[in-house]
Amino acid sequence: MPAWSSSWQLPDQIADVLPSEARHIEELRRLFLDTARRYGYELVMPPLLEHLESLLTGTGEALDLQTFKLVDQLSGRTLGLRADTTPQVARIDAHLLNRSGVARLCYCGPVLHTRAERPHATREPLQLGAEIFGHAGLEADLEIQLLALEGLTAAGVGSLSVDMADVRVVNGLLAGATISSGTLAQLHAALAAKDASELASLLASQPSISQASAEGLKALLQLYGDAKVLAEAEKAFKAVPAAVAALQDMRWLASHVANFGGAVKVGFDLADLRGYAYYSGTRFAIYGHGAELARGGRYDEVGAIFGRRRPAAGFSLDLKELVSVLAPRPLRAAVCAPWGVEATLRQAIAALRAGGETVVCVLPGHEHEVNEFDCDRELAHVAGQWIVQPLNKTLV
Image (cartoon, rainbow, N blue to C red; front, side, top):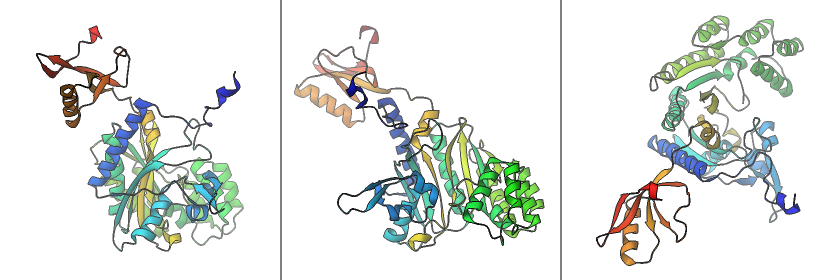
């Protein structure tokens, strides 16, 4: 292998996006942002890199480990390439907009991860999301979920399902216990993995966790499924007000989400607390085509580190991941035109393009080449006029 052959090889789990897929991604980007605009969301464009202390303020160790770091040649300060856009949007809401009422913001841009979230995933997701700040009621949670569902439905995802959980259930069970942040992370990991032996071992090592709370945490491992789970949990945790409130909120949200388009299945997994350090209330994940396509929830503390503790709810998804589970789009229809500089030909081509048509001018000698468009019509010179007529592909 020649030495120069590796010069254009990309890093692991980083890839170019080729024309057909890029077109599909761009169509989805426009679709989601247009949908968000119809809901009243304004587009913001945070920078790809920031001073590291600003980028990671309040985000926790997990995001720190996912963040690429480099030195600014101008200032000598350490910079970070964003691994998540949500904290940046919270900073914009807190410091730049500084609105007293509701703010609805959306975004779309690349993020970079030092490690992929799962095997075969990209380390350069194209993250799209929406955030609503300033409203503590369930109306904001519901709006965010409906916006995500509407976008995914419009994108062509069928048989959607929503899984819900709420960090207040576990927080309520652990209220009053003295637990280190490291042990708390282990407890949440054991719950998410439904590792009964690890959970039992951790609980046995924590004398500040009451017997009742320990039994409640163990019960969470079995509390997943349909709406019956909520009824079982309410009986089990009736002495924990925070948990009961969380269960009631999930029931209300589920009753409305299930009616979206008449085709959304809603489930619950009360032990699934991925991102527990991030969320302050209900969290959700949306599945379709056998994959998790979007996630979000309520994170009222996201802006606190920036000096504004405002209610906040939102969702995000990776457009590259979404495209990977959808059927490829058919080629875009186009008009094939001869190349030329004659005024009447140029005018005819300009008029077609102004009307929204894609016109591909065929360069001399390239009449039989394949391109990224379906040239189903041709611009032909007939009786002294340029007209569009069906293309006889058997002659091409």
